[in-house]
Length: 362
Ligand SMILES: Nc1nc2c(ncn2[C@@H]2O[C@H](COP(=O)(O)OP(=O)(O)OP(=O)(O)O)[C@@H](O)[C@H]2O)c(=O)[nH]1
Ligand SMILES: [Mg+2]
Image (cartoon, rainbow, N blue to C red; front, side):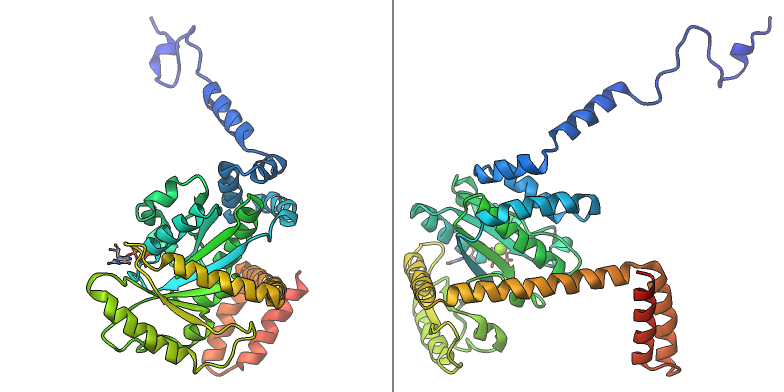
């Protein structure tokens, strides 16, 4: 007997129903997840109520490169903005191994001990390769991580420093709206990241360790110029004397720089992030700066200058990204580059052609 239903494995016997090509369970799971995606309003409510989970979700949204998330992220930021700004923002930089994470742990704990709410963010354009230095750091910040009044966020990842920096600035706004009154922005001195951090903080701290009497060797002049405070870390054990000498040397060097617009004479302190010696004095010095700059108006002047800087910076960044992401432009650029390299076309003429194409098709 020939039963067509059995001759091919493509056929199935009567009575056995084809399973649904889409699992109902999977649909239910995804629907539930979607429902769990809070709306912009829910995120804002959570942030304003001081909820760290809502804060983390909002920062993730802001960091998302998915254009569909952009509108929601902008809504959240716009609604948080009126509640932001009531903080002090401190930038911390220093070469790898100088003790930034250990310092922030000790310093942050000191601040929460004073009743402050501390958020730690990082600008680290290299972190897309190393998967975020603060992530590994969470072990160095063991106490701070557990502190209810502290919030630690691994660095935003991104391809360009401009992009990473913009996201960090937006994250600052969200942290402030969430009630954090002291924002610490950490960066390891790669590329131009110190300049980016300097442009988003009120106070810039350079962490150093004492060397063999050649303290000023290899230190970028621009960084010395930006620093409001140099903290010589690891001033413990055999290092105490050397740290004292380094302090004198840095103090002398700082006096050679022109006076700052803030009216502040940059200072040098020594501390140990392990014994906590000098941590309180370091905060004391920073507080003096805030008293001075708030009294003489510089604090607000600097913030408004930074706002206009970030306005143009964001426009530049997005125009550039839009320009280079266009396929027709990429092709034309490639072709024109060859012509420029062969001296058949001047770089300026080539740029003019490309820009003309870009704006013609807008
Ligand atoms: N003796 C002493 N050791 C310290 C001090 N601060 C940090 N260290 C040690 O120095 C090493 C580097 O410290 P980290 O805090 O990881 O340095 P970092 O600047 O965050 O380093 P990166 O994240 O790699 O840029 C660790 O072994 C710390 O224990 C200090 O004040 N005294
Ligand atoms: Mg670190």
